[in-house]
Structures are given as structure tokens and as C-alpha cells.
Image (cartoon, rainbow, N blue to C red; front, side, top):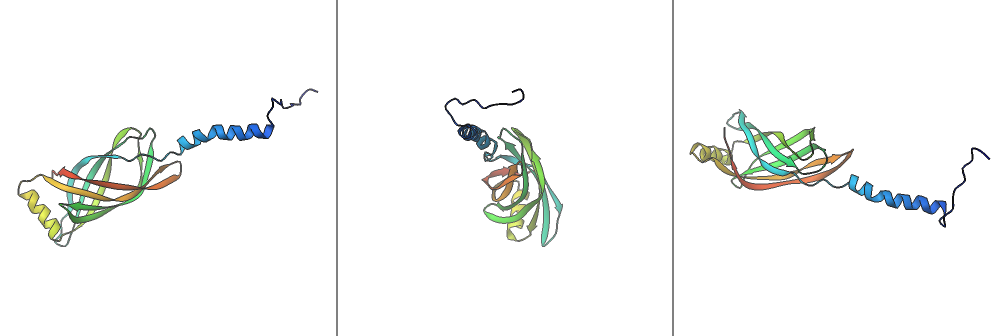
Length: 165
């Protein structure tokens, strides 16, 4: 009877062994599909005025974050409202994908269209008067994930930020 393999019955049916093996794999699947934790906001770098206009200006900066996850993730498609000194300042959107390394800092380049209303002019006057700190508030969301599974992740921050031109 060479070439045939007969199952060994140890008191369990073969079907029950398959069910048990799926239950043993379930924790591994749960860890592999775990929801990523949020990024730690570290600050703004390289703040610059790209285009200055009387009605609308364009401002650019690199926002620094830390990824505390034990695995790399991808960020794609985000939108954030920016407030300066508790007044709406502008909106920035992310329309490309960014690969974020595990347990490391990363810079997120942002471009912000600013409506040059009283808020923007007041902020410029504040910075021109010698104050280098502004109360910044970020409110929005971005799609974050890995392995093709993405979730909408909230982006929330409020605090004082030094602005250097």
C-alpha cells in the first residue's frame, strides 16, 4: 500500500482539526490587520510663502510627525482645515500617496491656499510685530493603512507653534 496516506484519528474528527487550525490562525490575522495608532505631531518646518496676493496667497511648509507603529503604513487622500489664533486660515489637501516608515519621524509637505481676509492679515501683523508663536489648530482626516486596507483617520491638533520664515 505504498503511496497512500491515511489520516490518524486521535479522538478528533479531521473536520474538527481544520476548525481548530483556523481558530489558532485568528490571533495572527487580528494582529496583522490591527488598526494603526495615530501619529505624534512634532511641529512645522520650512515655513515659506510661495505666492503672495492681495486676495489669495499660497503658503508651504513641512509638517513633522512620528509614526509609533511597529510597521510601515501608507497615507493617501487627506484634507485638513487650518486655524491660526482661533480663526479659519485655510485648507490643505493631500492627493498623493506617502510611504511612512515604522517607528520613525517623517515630513509631510503641505501647500495651503490662504484667503487674505482679516485673519491672514492679522497673522502677518502678529508675526511682523515680533511675536514668533501662533496658536495653531488642525482639524481633518486622512486615509491611512497597509496591505490595501485603509481607514479614515482623524487628524486633530491644537497648540502653540513657533513660525520662522
